[in-house]
Length: 159
Image 1 (cartoon, rainbow, N blue to C red):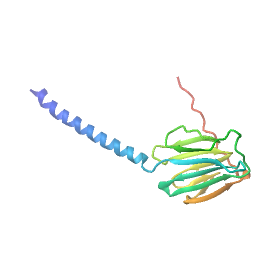
Image 2: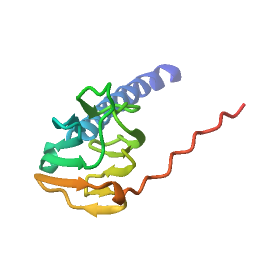
Image 3: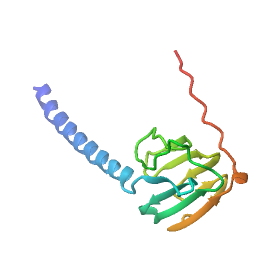
């Protein structure tokens, strides 16, 4: 008799916990993706000077352009648009150093032509200098301004 009296409240508690978990899980999923990812267009002008155009509509950034003066794109360069919505993206030129995409747009750190570029929701950091986000802006990066970020150390496997 006592076992039957515990079964019904336990089943009710389980159903309530399951509904609560599903509700909070879906709300958290919405909060993680609602602002959308960083979107970078890797392009070059007719002279082969590379540029990156940054888009992030939820922050009001539409065509924030970085021009790498004095640089040339590799011969096998193909213009591409990269959305940083999943980890371990590759970039057509440069090196992908770090990302934190838990809550989009997140943080993305790149080494492009020797320039340290860090995309943060509050600001853009170029060669260690903070630049405020503006809807449309152009920053020309000269070779003498390079300040490469240190490479991210590889984690050693533990056995």
